[in-house]
Amino acid sequence: MIQLSIIVPTLNEAQNIDRLIEGIARAIPKVDGAPMPYEIWVVDDNSDDATVAKARAWADRVPISVLERR
Image (cartoon, rainbow, N blue to C red; front, side):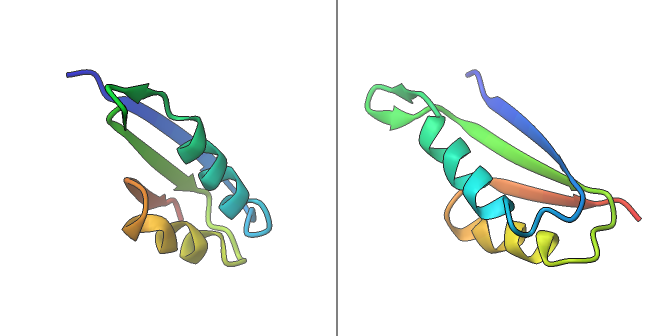
């Protein structure tokens, strides 16, 4: 099985992260009518805004993991 891994580096992207994750989810190709297996990794460089919280809020809708670099 092939899985697409998308790595998104972030720093203070709270204003953009929702639109970005939504766009990625919409762009995932379909295989036999279902989205191909994928994962999104948000690698945050110690943002001081709500980037991390907003990214984690997507976990119930898309396969996402958030890694915080301090």
